[in-house]
Amino acid sequence: MNHWIIAPVLLPALIAAVIILAARYQVALQRVFSVASTLGLLGISTGLLIESMSGRIGVYELGNWPAPFGIVLVLDRLSATMITLTSALAVAVVLYAIGSGWDKRGHHFHALFQFQLMGILGAFLTGDAFNLFVFFEVLLIASYGLMIHGGGAVRLRAGVQYVLYNLLGSTLFLFALGTIYAVTGTLNMADLALRVAELPADDTAMIRVAAILLLLVFAVKAALIPLHFWLPATYAEAPAPIAALFAVMTKIGAYAIIRMYTLVFGPDVMVTADIIGPWLMPAAIVTLVIGMVGVLGATHLGRLAAFAAVGSMGTLLIAVALFTPQATTAALYYMIHSTLAGAALFLVVDMVRARRQSEDDAIASRPAIAQNGLIAAYFFATAIAMAGMPPLSGFLGKLLVMDAVRAHDLVWVIWAAILIGSLIAVVGFARAGSMVFWKVETQPEDATPDAGPGTPPAALPFVATGSLVAGIVALTVFAGPVTAFLSDTSAQIFDRQSYIAAVMETPRAIEAENLPLEGTKK
Image (cartoon, rainbow, N blue to C red; front, side, top):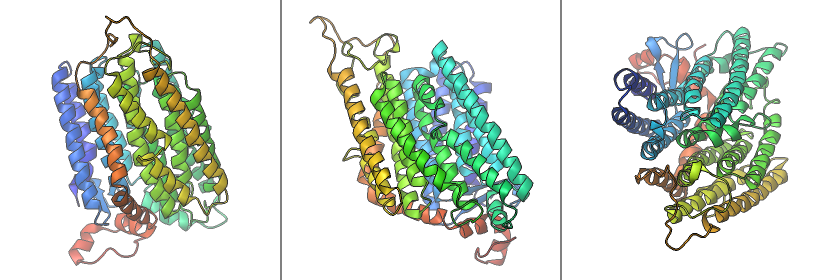
């Protein structure tokens, strides 16, 4: 049993406790612990990603209790990819928070940040549906505090809305889990896959209800129409480092849909085969359209970035809704791209706010800001990526999605939505960039660019944002190897029997007898 599998969950939890108990009033020491923890997470996650490339699914049994009686964490290519992506994003975010001074604007930033990482990484690794709920709550509780970090009436109002929507989602999640347990008697995902497949045809009404409730829960997390209303205000008003980290939180909803609706309620499971895809695809298309129209109509940079996140989730979920290996490969590539691009865009927006009076982010002509040229370059790079223009990874990701839907009945509708949506996004981003960075108000010749009262003097924010832009470029340059790995990941996702065998078998007994992992123990 590989004990490194639990390290991404334990490390941030322990560091958060240490920060609260030993460094509560020492910001410098908190920063040291937080940076060391996130760098350690990145190293551990990278090691686990390399290990997952062997194709073997790793299982960690808490307390040495085998599934389905005990809690298990499962490491496969999908979970390894997501924890590595999250850890890489966390490093950039914590560096930006330190360099910009955001971590000093309120209490307990670094402790809450570590607890949120614990929840996110635990959600990606857990092999149990109830513990998926538990980790959801851990990350949400931490995000509640981070959302209102720095104070302000507008931020508090957006935070209350965020809390209410997610409490509704949590309540539905509990109802769904209770229904599933009442029907199957288990919440372990691998065991659920076995029991749902064995349900008699005349006893499926309750499990179908539970599957729909779960989909609604994950739709709330993924900001899918019509459950997206919480996202624009929340992301636009959240502190910039938190909004950047939130870029991966919506992906948890997409991840959960992929995991649960390929493993437990898969397309080949007759009980639920006809209730997921037909509803998910139209909602994803509308989400894409609404997001891109929001980009065009936004009057503030924060709202523009938030609606761009909504639109990217629509594109991602179009690929997810097909539930095929090819489409899942496209979805995973676009998931990585949109996480990096969305996070970078939120950080660029904060750079503009910090250099204007009163953190103004209106899309309007203002005096030139400090470092205007470099920030403009960052903005247009992220805009090109988010809009899906060549040559960056957004263009490649949308091509992969469009290629994956060629055999779908709504192919022309999907293609039109993606292409027209990209055109609308280009116009929206071009308008915003021109107004903010090029059409600046003239100043007297002896005046210097107004850097604003909150301008961070350090170069660290530029390094953090630049690392995300570099990640987008690397994803473009190495698109071939990345898609090859993600293709293997998709094949593993749809190989339900291998996942079930790895979790439900007893690895200790297999190693003792020197037998391969074959079959499924019932």
